Length: 221
Image 1 (spheres, rainbow, N blue to C red):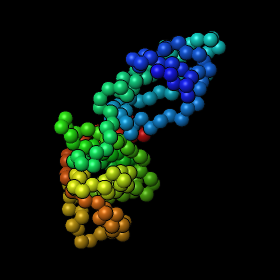
Image 2 (cartoon, rainbow, N blue to C red):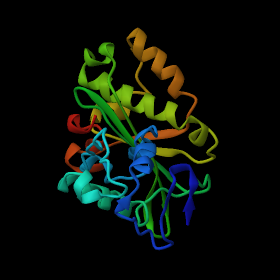
Image 3 (cartoon, rainbow, N blue to C red):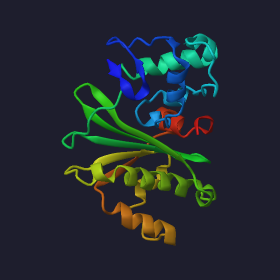
Image 4 (cartoon, rainbow, N blue to C red):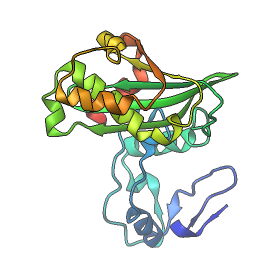
């Protein structure tokens, strides 16, 4: 398989030639890193290490010499992950949909999944740091913000559904948010947005929310 944009060659079996031209490596270094966390649920478990900014003067250079052993190992793990399950599947509006969110003290993490004959399968992962205002929210509002943010991310998918989707949260009180009668100004704004969607909120203990927890982990932001 020829990959001219990166100026290197990989076999059909996905073999990576560990001897590369320094100019070709420099081309790769200049590419803006893609957001892998949107595609791989294990991304949060692999702390990526940057390639060094310099290349050797030799015509060919081995990745073992260019990369620290840990970084080389992580490169192989990510390469394997992109060619094996679980990777993202295409969105199918006829399948049941699940949104899982987590909002600890400093970040938001979410995953959109669908349930098919083989079980639950990821459609997309996402995460972001909390803005300064969000850092001051009470835990109830942080978790609610996580739901609002996730639904904004996948609004194009979720608004088209004819059947209700399910949202899992670690905050049990949010199960009754939609039916509440009293809101703060911020909550009222969120409630108006959420009213556009047809969904139910289900409480799930934090110990069971492994994927959204990993996406919002401080070490991975």
